Image 1 (cartoon, rainbow, N blue to C red):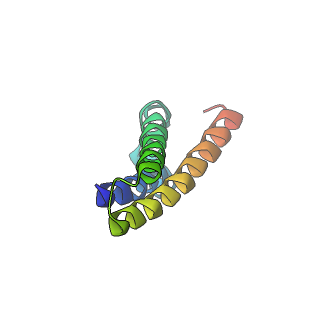
Image 2 (tube, rainbow, N blue to C red):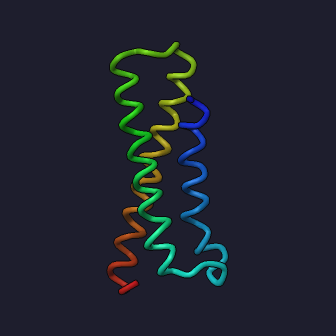
Amino acid sequence: MALVALGVPIVSLALLFTPLVAPTSIDFQSFIGVVMPAVLGLNSANLLLFLVVSRRRMEPQLPLSLWSIGAVFSGVCLATALVFAGFFAILGG
């Protein structure tokens, strides 16, 4: 479970930066309508699950440490997605 929690933000950041690397490969309307809400939802769920598990101390220390690294990455991913959403809102996308 901890490796999945670590992989969620990595895959999310890869999806967020796809239009910046190859802008012709993706339609911005589908990106805003599908990818952005999915990234926000998955990373928010990752953060909330980490908070629940860390408060109850349900797992051994190593998986919890990996999950905490994933939670930090999820926070970075959430901030990046919100900044992109602000850019798209200002630009009229």
